Image (cartoon, rainbow, N blue to C red; front, top):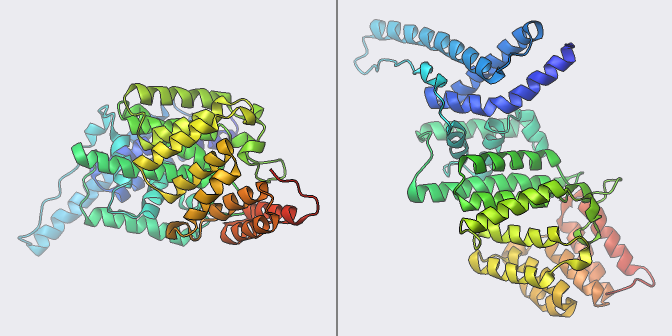
Length: 424
């Protein structure tokens, strides 16, 4: 096998196996840094041996064995050094170092990944730290890749990850899946982080590209993993249903020149039908399990209305407006109200929606939200109030940090100012 092909296979194996390897090692050594170090040592061993010996039939088991041997060697040395220090110092407070049970790495502990997800999304960490640590430990992304994904400086992300690990260590966080009320609280944080990662990939907040598909793929992978590990948690299936159906539109969301293509103008023949089927199946499962009224399931039901419409004109906007009303009742939010106004505008006309949008202009949470003036501009254009529409689109362009969206909004503003611009 060619050297480049071997490297590609090792890279693929590493992406697949690293989270499980680190999860198992954290369970045994109870130290994220040490677990990562041992996993990296196993990767180095693979890079040394596999080009000449070939990729083993069970590369995950091979990496686990290599990490285990390296861990035993390293910790035996540490055990010896600590014993000598204890003797020389006659320290009465000295606690004997206990060698972790590396043999338990061979046990089939099915929820190592689950523990790792809940640890990375611990509420002691900020949302930014949770995302960075989740992508590092579960996405197998390097610090450089995470920094590039979030358009942040590499040292910033590196510091964020270091501080997150330090926080977990100083808080003596247990590497376990919480139970009862704590599970519900932590699960919400886990799902929130996964959806934030997906959304940053689906519509980037800044930068030159409107989408970052790699982040969406990573969030989908995490969601599918979680759904497999927690088959009875309805919110997990609801979120996965939502992400599968939203991801189905990605091939149609960008023109060949990189220009964003809005929902109603997308070529629905380019939507990924397999992802739609997967999403609809997850939504049906969520409803069957009794989670139909939960926030992610309601959003997935809205996505399903779009997915089932083969043409934009077939969309059941009245149903979507009703679902948004229910969602706003369950989780009140001005962003949800704005989305409901859009649906009302499509179902009943722009004159019915504009008062709903105007009422949101005083909401502090939307003061710098570029989609508020964008939606208002769209309604004003349909009502023939072109000067006001152009001003709204220019305001939307000013508020967004994404270069593609800025261009789109400026083009719409210019279009409203052009002679003979149609309305409605």
